[in-house]
Length: 219
Figure 1 (cartoon, rainbow, N blue to C red):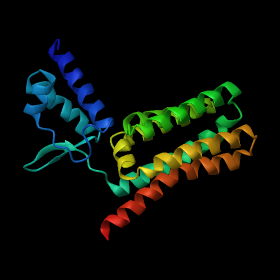
Figure 2: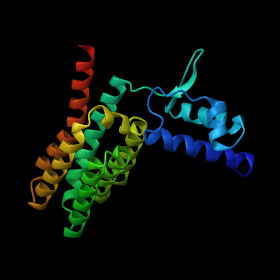
Figure 3: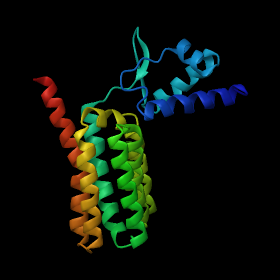
Figure 4: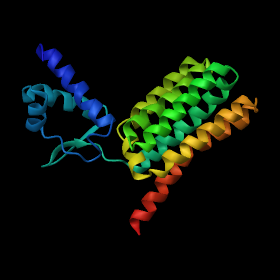
């Protein structure tokens, strides 16, 4: 690594990417000396990176055990995903009339790539493609402020996105089918409120599956 500032930035990006792709899942202990050895640097930039990630909510500190990747807070997850469902539902409805045949073809290609990732049990790639699928649609909504809010909410979910799919893997298959149904609705020129409702329920279906999983764990 280069200068101290570059070392801190590289340590931050390195750690953040591993948290967001699920390599370091919720509850994973971040042992500074071990991480520094993996990165080939001193503990100082690692410590600074962990502090930044704590400020972003991706890392939490517990007395006597140090830093660890933030656990899935069921209530916070539910609240965040509910907000995202409303925002993305509205953005999808606005975007529908702007999507061209070429856009639909690109979206179907993304959906097929998701199917392949699902077959390969590569949930990190699956999650990235899923995010891209919805990004391509929402970017067509012609509403910059709405897009800004969607990105902010999505950022809050990045730490747990892959972990949640690991807990409810059947949603990966259901989601692919729902994506195709959404594209058919858009192609058919369905009313905006119909598209919005479907897109919102598509997002909430993941929350419902997660809530069901939590209830089963309590039994």
